[in-house]
Image (cartoon, rainbow, N blue to C red; front, side, top):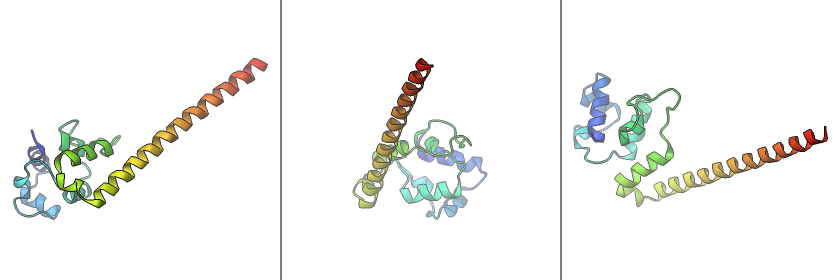
Length: 136
């Protein structure tokens, strides 16, 4: 099953016609039927905004469930970035997209550093508690 067929399955689940769905995301007539490998970023943004219950991980990769769980309503940056790189060659040339990717890389690096610092803090805390317990 590809992106187009998963999208059609979702539209059917929502009891919409393809045309109603296309109108709701400001897409042209026959947009859904013209999808060959990928969906443009502008359309993905419109879909996310209009249909927050649709799990983008499922839509793009076929993994998981069609509907977002309340515990995990957002697609990971890694999955979305991988999909966009693999399926949208024109995006790679876009300076805005490169900036987006670079900012996400920066965020991921900061999150990793934050995690490392938290782990260090916990090790120091444990060592201090151990020392304190030994003195008692």
